[in-house]
Image 1: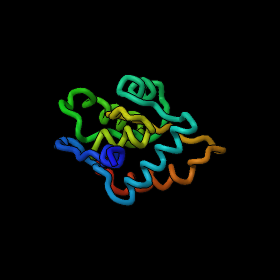
Image 2 (image 1 turned 120 degrees about the vertical axis):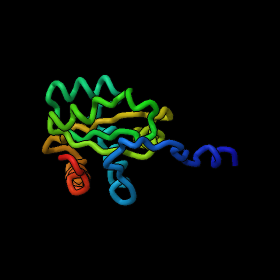
Image 3 (image 1 turned 90 degrees about the vertical axis):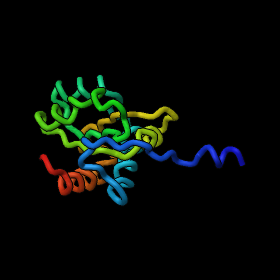
Length: 140
């Protein structure tokens, strides 16, 4: 009984005013599925320094940022860098959701899924999520 109570998802108490585009519903489910597949193939960059470094080196992919991080100064530079480098990004309502999708108990503030190679198992999911983000993204 105690284990079932622990698995209850945490709600985000804070959502940043800068969090745009914030994904939800079907696109969110697809994005979390994409994260799980990419993690299993070790095609992700996790955390602010690692993602920033990957973008500066010119790696392409999709960046998922948590909208409930306070203060936003921690990664306020990431959306700007992503736009400069042509990397699509979106916000997920909770860092705990990102942590769960990455199969870890720790909350994660920023994850970058690298562009799949031709033989990767998550190519179709990646394309679906990318087209969904392109449709709702106001700045790119």
